[in-house]
Length: 414
Ligand SMILES: Cc1ncc(COP(=O)(O)O)c(C=O)c1O
Image 1 (tube, rainbow, N blue to C red):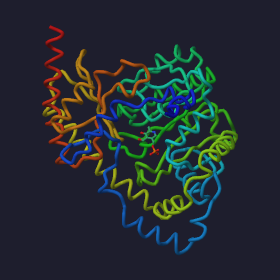
Image 2 (image 1 turned 90 degrees about the vertical axis):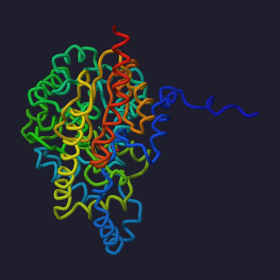
Image 3 (image 1 turned 90 degrees about the horizontal axis):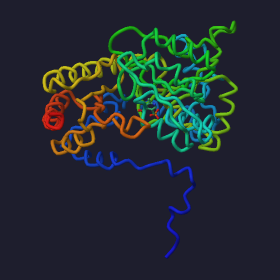
Image 4 (image 1 turned 180 degrees about the horizontal axis):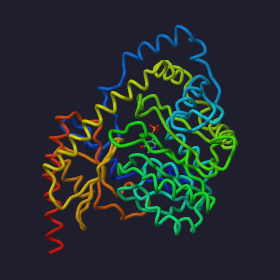
């Protein structure tokens, strides 16, 4: 018998764990299950016809170029389009500050490679994006966590955390995944002030910023960055690395995201990306450019805002109608998710097992915390993917499992 493969795996794989949740969520693939689990856009809003035309046009007009290897930085017209789009939000980047990646997920992996030595501290929000923890974990960081409330990261607790000397902060200012909360303007200002005071850079992950259904747009951290504000050459992207993606505005199947950073950072990331995949698909970048151009993306984002805004409202109404009084939830101003808090003693993993029996699914809260045992009484609900009819029925089904779970914890407390 040969040596088991696991003996050959590199040490760094020890921190990468398969999750029990993924196994459970496999059960939710059944047709009859209403899933609020994934962060999936609504398939009915994908602009399929526009993609069809774009593919044809790319092949007709630039066939050989589209099928050839290309530069690691990415397709120049697309980088120009992104830089122009960013200017609208006050981010004065040039195409040289933009690196196209195979989704934001690759951006997180490249940034982890760039910045994390084993044992380095990384400051994350609690809760935070699960995929970022997965990307970072491979490089063996220690986490410093700062909780979020309805106004986002608790900046009143940030200074103590910064004294622990983290290498960087990973921050989701808009409609955070998983909690749906948005960092207030005052806290954004406090955050960039403290980032500057302690010399700790920020990785600002912003896949959802354009998907706002109520309230006013708030300036990105990269614009408020004090390092930038001090300079007389405009926003030169001093202390913040900014990430975004086409996954939520066009289609996640494209696997197309981008990093905006000072040129020194981009140059190093380009070398790392060469080792990972040489470059992001030329064809995909050219098709995305063709789809997005001439104002189409702006129009399409308006449609998505309308559809998802309605679904958010429907879910909020259904929660108010069906969920027991002891349970609370966030009121997201945009994005794809909201976050539910059950009474002390309730267990989201236990609830999921019961919910699957009722043919409904969600993601239990503990996945979104680096420390084991945190977030047990929370869970995340996605409101973009299910249809309006499914949303109401799914929340009704979930309330059946939830009432049983809340009832149990009342018994334990008694
Ligand atoms: C906060 C956050 N960052 C990054 C990603 C990864 O997105 P992409 O599809 O661009 O890889 C997601 C996807 O859900 C996300 O929620």
